[in-house]
Every structure is written in C-alpha cells, then in structure tokens.
Image 1 (tube, rainbow, N blue to C red):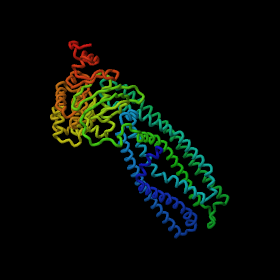
Image 2: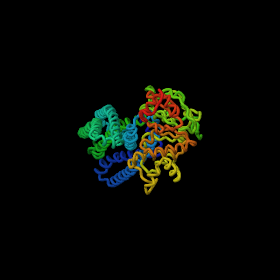
Image 3: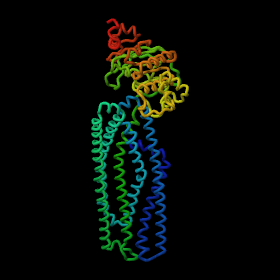
Image 4: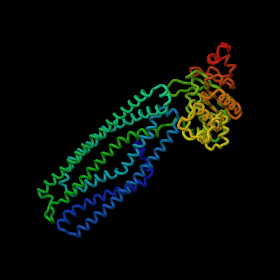
Length: 589
C-alpha cells in the first residue's frame, strides 16, 4: 500500500461522515451550476421582455438554490474538518503507541529527532492535507467535469477556447509536481536537523553554560536554521512562480472568451431568436462555466502541491508505522508467572548493529536466586550493555540468557519487565510529583508502600522536609532536585515495585557515602526476596557482594568470584584495586 493510501485508511474509519461530506459537496456544486444555468433565462428572456412573473419565479428559484448551496457548504466544511481532526488524532495515537513499542535498536535507527519531527510536523502536514482534501477532492473534478459539459452544451463555438487553455494549464501543473516533490522532501530532512540541534541544546543547558558554549551552540542552531530557511524558500519558490503563471493562463482565458464572444455576436451566432438581441446571458453563463472549469483545475493544482508536501510526510510516517520491531513476543510466550530470580548467561555475544563489532564476547556465568552480584570493569567494557540484555532492551547476537531455566525470549515482555527493577546510570525524572514518579514502578502503590520504598532508598530524609511530601512537584528531568535526590527517587521507584530482580547501573554515584552504605544494607536485607545486580566503578561499593563479575576492555569475562578470590586471580580486578585501594593491598600476580 502506498504511503498516502496508508494514512488515508484513517479517514475511511469515519466513512459515514465522509459519505455525508461527499453527498453535501455534490449538492453544493450542482446548486452552484443550477444557479448559473438559470442566468440566461433571467437576462435573455425575463429582463428584455419585462416578464415579471418569469423574473420573480426565476430569481426566487435562484435565491432558494443558492441558500441550499450555502447550507450544504457550511455543513460539508464542519463535517470534513471533524473527520480530518478525528482521523489525525487516531494517526497520532497509533504513531505514539508504535514509537513506545520500538526497541532500542529501532530507535537507534530512526534517531530521536526524526521521531519527534514525524510525531509533530509530519502529522500536522497530514492533518492540513486531510482538511484541504476532504473539502475539494470532490469539488475539483465536479467543477471541471460538469462545467466542461455545461459549457459545451451552452455553446460549442465558445468551447474552442479550451483547446488552448486546458493543455497549457495541465502542462503547468505537471511541471509544478515534478519540481515541488523533491524540494519538499529536502525540507522535511532539514527539519530533522533543526530538531536535533534544538533537542540537544534543551537537554544539556548546564553543560553548555558551564563550558561557555553558548556562542558555539547558537552558531550550530543558526547553521541548521539557515539551511531550513534556504531549503524552505527553494520549495516555496515553486508556489510563487506557479501562482502567477496559472493566473496568467486563467485571466488570458477569460479575456479570450470575451473577445471570442464579441466576434461570434458580430457574426450573428449568439443572437436570441425570441428578442433578436445578443445572448448576453449565454455569454455570462459560459464565462461562469469557464471560471468553474479553471477553478476546478486550479484546485487540482493545489491538490497536487499539497500531495507533494503530504507525500514526503506520509512516507516518513509509513516508515515508522511499518517498521518491524525486532523485539516481539512469541505467540505462545509465557505469561502470568512469578519469577524466582535465577539468571544464567550461556555463551552470549552482543553487538548494537547486526554486522557491527561485538561489545560482549562469549559471556557465560550463573547467578543463583537471591544472590548479590557486583559488576566492575574499565570504561567501555560492556557493563551497561550486559545488564540491558536481562530485561530484553536488546537481544543477544549469539547464545542465550535464561531466567529460572527458561530462555528470556520465551517470556512475555511485560511479564518479564514488570518483575525487574531497573535503575539506569542517568536518573530519569518526569514532570509531575515525587509520588507520580515513584508510582511508575507500581501504578497503585499505597502511601505506606511509598514510605517504605523511600526509606529503603534513603529518600525520606529529604521528602519529609517538603510540606506536601510525595505531592511535591518535580519539574521536567527533575531540574528542581539535586543529582543525589534524583538518584534516590529513581531507586525508590524500583524498590516500590518489589522486583524479583533488581539492577542498579552505577545508580548511587551521586549519593553520599553514608546513604550509599545504607542503600546497600537494604539490598542485603532484601536478598531473600530478590536477586540484585549492582554495577559500580568503585570496589568499595561491591566488595561485600556474594560475587563480582569482572569485564575486560574486550567485553570478555576476566573473573567471576568473591572479592578475596578476585584479588588473587583477576588481573583486571587487581589493577582496579591497586588504583583505588593503594599499593598497600597485596595481591598475587
């Protein structure tokens, strides 16, 4: 299915309203033509003979028909606008839901700025396309077809003007289409670049100000803005040149028609048999028919321009909607199961791209239920990549991961992830309140559960300082909280879930040593109820864990044992210990 056809399926969901809109438009156009059809009767028959009965009858009929056209036109506009709004709302919702379901691999492919542009700018263009199309898609061919038929029936002689004007207008429209479409495609790409710079600047204001990068970022934005402006101007130039050319053809046709009419009247071809006077009414009617014909083609040209703009947006929307999600549930996946927390990696290889370099190589280890595991390694060793495989944020390239002896690919994604508490390296806080942020871990968590989780995460000490406690407002990205406070709210969000597997990705780096020790004690106390995995750059954080997984800078396991064992057997661990604990800590080579 074409991209425009795909987005048009959203309009056809409201086919009764679309059908009503079409019927109303047909009535509206027919009414307009019928008024024109009565013009010669009024001008060439009623007025010259002063037939007042015919004058009032015809005039009253014209007014009545015009009123019907007015009412149907208003209702058609309201109906088509509502259909466009509802259809676009459905499209926007489906697009949002699809983006939510995309895996990290899919998101890496599209990039965040592209997805934002598609969800906003592209959808808005489709909405404008729907609004315009539903009003004139039927009107344009009706005006052209009925107008051409009525013009030929009214005067075959005057219809000769169309042999020149119509081909010129059609050729102009085709040229506009050929030039406009690639230009509007380029406009959409430059919007992506503009959004990318805006998003990066909005996400890192403190870094930009701290390193005095305002001028540099302003220049980056100005470059992207200038590119967008120039590309947009190049696209709009098509409209700027198209409109006067089309109007030139339009006005030349009207002028030629008047000249041709005067010529035929002079030849005695447009004379009323009843009055012997020139058929001025026929010429006026033909002139109106011609205007309808040319307006029909002009509307068609507008449709083509809108299509060229909408097609670029529709292609981008279709790409997202049709994107094959690489992380999907199997048809017979396991649901409604309580995990115990046993984890096993078997010969796991992982790369972010299918043909890219492996980040993890031949990873194999086993974690018993309730064990506390630390993970350490140099920067770039794949620590964060490894733990992202457990809740299936990414899939392995080779090997398999088992939880409770079952391949994680056999679990329903929601079932798997709902029993894992994952706290990322960068604390993510949403606008709302402390309570709503915590309830993302458990949507209907009670007040007591929020208090317990906050206590475990050492967050109560600052939450209880606020008069409104859990109702205290959090701004976007938690900009009104300190780094340590954001990390503790993130930890509380994981604790309130009461997960069977808790994963902390260096999630206490901004927390003071005393609070970190208290958090680790809470994890130790909860070890009977959950398996915990803690990534840290500091040996002091994980040295008391049951086992520590050491990764080399090649993404391979250098050791998996207790702190004491690793001090004897793991070269990587020994080097880290030497740098952190000092030379006074003996170890064997």
